[in-house]
Length: 302
Image (cartoon, rainbow, N blue to C red):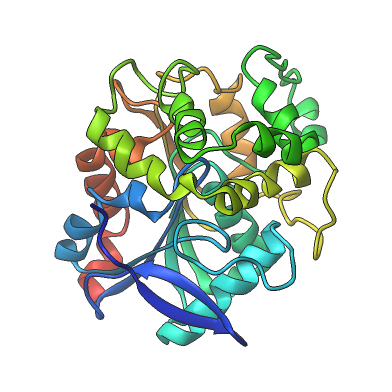
């Protein structure tokens, strides 16, 4: 049984569901990716709050318990418009922002779009700005795609309605999402118990929720209109801590070299043995201790 979130109004008639155990401390925003919701942070929220953070984990628009996009947009600019509304509603001027998968890319866009409001980033995978010219100039070869790994991207991005129509029962929708925690090898074998999967896939039993989660892939594949340009075409100037789980098939190549260019103030990347794509759940102690250490100066000042 998942706990009930709080709701924060971030725009006219538009609410985000958030998990927030305390209301004081160093502002820390935790952003989930696909196929997750804020529940992926379940094992890290309380330890981070105990360390002195005012930690908030929202469901992005359309995900989990948050409202669907009132304007139909599910892109970085739209997600971040919501999150700036969340900052304002919480009374935050600046925050540390941590994310993985889609959440990491939203955080990178936020750091460039609203630089004055992002103190530093924590990236929990190999997400980074898209800088092909800078990488090529440094002698870093372009990465190769893995068609057998990314088949879901094509279907979700180009044939979303057909895929949702195939997944025509709650059980089929939940089994589809469970594949990303299982045979698709985004994480080590048996990293998630049946009880874990029951909790984490439950929000996707709803067809509308599943369909909304495919919208980001439609943006990636150029099949969906965006509300504004993505600001992931430049390095992130804030300090960035990068932790990566090696046990996943979705990793790119030349990660350390690319990180040094994409994040001029990078700390890492550090590899976390035994972790895959879902580090906040797989290695929560490593995650919350790393964030606490990375932000130790902020905690002292608070």
